[in-house]
Image (cartoon, rainbow, N blue to C red):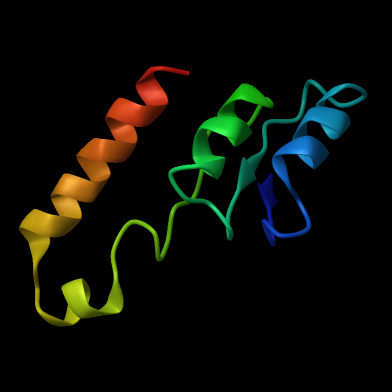
Length: 82
């Protein structure tokens, strides 16, 4: 289940809802960044949807794929530690 927006479906919300509904896989989108992404995973999210924190509008318009790839690798490394 995609949980949106992240400002409402906070990491604490994930932790609370996973108690009675552990069988429902959930993924937050919105408000996901390098601080909240690990919090969501630790709270029981099966994945996170990273948007603006992964690729800025400027990087997309400039086709700066190397920078976007670097951001993605950073998130993979960050979340592999959870």
